[in-house]
Amino acid sequence: MARRAETIELAVLGLLHEGPMHGYELRKRLNLMLGWGRVLSYGSLYPTLKKMLRASLIEESLATKTPGTPVSKRPRITYQVTEAGTREFERLMSEVGPTAWEDDNFDIRFAFFSSTDMEIRLRVLEGRRTRLQERLDRVQTQLSITQKEVDRYAAELQRHGVESVEREVEWLSELINAERNGTPHHQSQTTAPVAPPIRPPATPAADQKL
Amino acid sequence: MARRAETIELAVLGLLHEGPMHGYELRKRLNLMLGWGRVLSYGSLYPTLKKMLRASLIEESLATKTPGTPVSKRPRITYQVTEAGTREFERLMSEVGPTAWEDDNFDIRFAFFSSTDMEIRLRVLEGRRTRLQERLDRVQTQLSITQKEVDRYAAELQRHGVESVEREVEWLSELINAERNGTPHHQSQTTAPVAPPIRPPATPAADQKL
DNA sequence: GTTAGCATGTAAGGAGTTACATGATTTT
DNA sequence: AAAATCATGTAACTCCTTACATGCTAAC
Image (cartoon, rainbow over all chains, first blue to last red; front, side, top):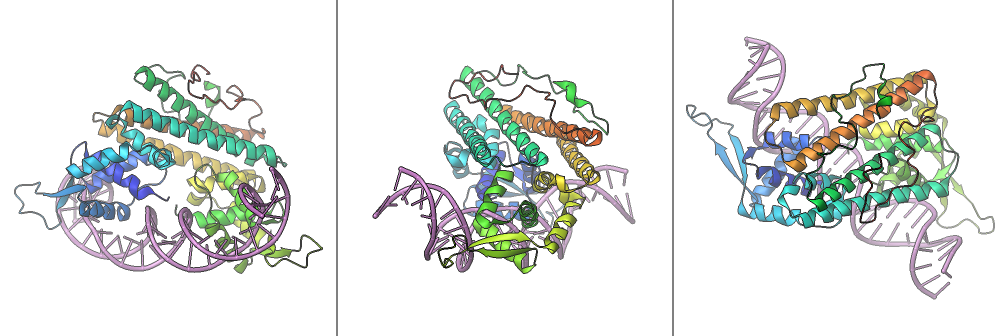
């Protein structure tokens, strides 16, 4: 993954706006946030924090948590954003352009959407949607020109991929509508509420659902 | 992305089983196959091919395409699998275990499922499903213990993530069923056929669809 | 004749994971 | 008291992307 360093910085700044945190916790929150695929390693997070310290985007304060003990040899370090960090966060969040709607970047930006204007939100959402549609088009045209005997499984993989992206486009469309109407999203479910985390142990009949 | 080198090798071996190809074409096919996210760069593909040549997994043959011209200075190189390559491919494809059902690896393995026994296919599909369910569980439990005031957008992102993974679990379940019944998959559509690639230009009303 | 796409490569560099190393605190 | 988990780091290494460099071939 190319430009993730920037993404991590943005995420750290965003999370620290919720209050001071130390590295370990930061990592957990981060992994919960975008941890659907890879998880962030310490070897990646701590150097980033150091870098951000040097850039004065964040400050550290050694927490003397337990008042009895005389300050441990290995102190917990709590980080907080500086003013410069806040400004940088705002700058990054109001960026519109490819960096905002690429796969990784989009997720993190979306998670902190509350910190931006609707105008920006709409532009990012629409940018993302356009990007996905371009992907769909590219695949569809390439499939139509190639058209050689397709393997069953390869074809099924394609189909599933297209379906997933199409669904994400629909999701974005809903969000865009919600933004325009000022509607808080997903109060009205279109699909049946996905209440109990479906778990077919070995004999799943989960297909008739829809 | 950590172990992609192996993945590329597997993909190359698989694709070359469909017939000889040169690097450029290989790259195009590869990007169409797993190109939903990142695209594979030449700087990654050609060194891999060289490496595979050295390992005798593939062979090159300089195509003297146009019989008139005396062999161009820059010849097209066509690659084909060797016997060793075929064996390696079969070995890799019959691997069951984490490497088989991690995000990247799974896709490529699935695409070449025709080259394996049903037994292996089932094990890989089930392994993948279990992996995804673990992810769901982890997130769900972590959400239940954290339970602090969640931001609207962060929550929506979570919800969407969970929904996507749940849907992939359902997809896998269908495939597993199909394997067990010997049914060719997705002849019977459960959702309406996704015929025209929905494209809401600026005023999308694509929500009422379902 | 010139733009666009086909085709093959290499070198430098960045980004991040793995593995290692250490120690504190909480739970069982 | 052991095991798990919290907590902080570093160094080496791998993988891959970016950018560059070259040249052919088809279309406009």
